[in-house]
Image (cartoon, rainbow, N blue to C red; front, side, top):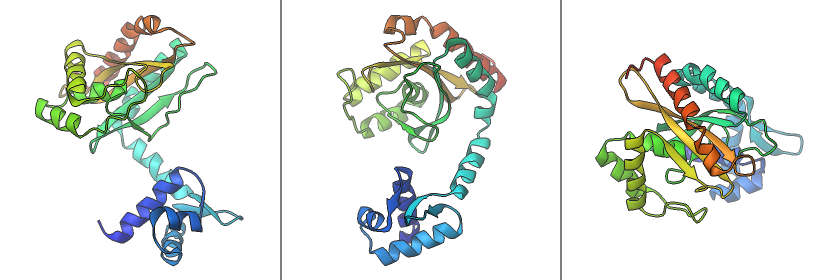
Length: 247
């Protein structure tokens, strides 16, 4: 990838974290202000970046349009949508859909909880490979050699006392997930959140997405979250059927 493209992508990534001034962007990516300004002007022309009246830069409407097109091109998102919406309406809990691409797990759809406590997650955000239920479902479907390669390359950031911290621990967890057909995040990413996830398969039988339900423990204790598993599995099976899967 050319240096110019790399720098432009870094600028967009930084703006994804929030508005920035020219000086801040130059410092963050380690490039002279004149170079950053030229890049920002090009991005502005394509509406990927917007500069406000205070000369601070934001992500632009052109990028929003591209992200909408990217989501529209994900057939599984459209296929699963009515089933996810029904699950969310029936339970009132946060429902996610995630996919695995380019070595990352990304949320591609989300239905918010009716409860006051909301999840930090958002569409387009990456999910931890070692501490989220959706990632475990998606990684468990990989061939054993690929599964091991991914596990050995994970940065095992510890978020809670329950976080998996070694390749061996993650591989053992993935073997369990593959055998039982669902995964859990028992306060592994956030101490007060429990999550269960199930696979969505296409006509080939391959896992193309993971649907999950996340619940704060002040709303439901862990044991009661597990009682929702049959409903979650039914949702995943219905979405898989519409995607062409025949067990």
